[in-house]
Image 1 (tube, rainbow, N blue to C red):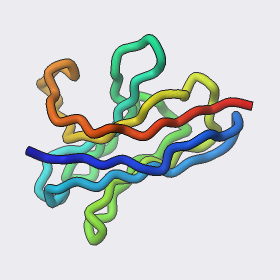
Image 2: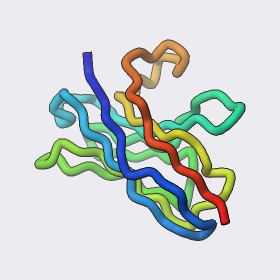
Image 3: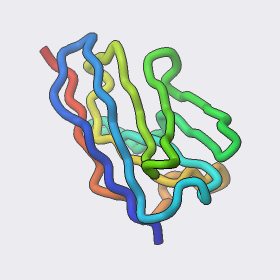
Length: 118
């Protein structure tokens, strides 16, 4: 079972930036698709962005976030710019399984807390 470790979160002012990192016990080049997800207070977990092995990217939060990966470092990134208070959430990475409801995913990491506040 894959293990995911997220880092890079923190407290940032509105308009600020953060870069999240995710490492996994599995060679990410062998994973069909990876994604960033978040759980905002009082809400269900949601997809933020996904990246598949062909480089195809999909954003559910368009315009401000950039997903990327470094295969040499076996690391997935999420660059977050122009952060807003509503981006406050725990952010997770995971293999993206497009035919599987998020509620059925297993093996979540601890996530990394992002708090956007002045």
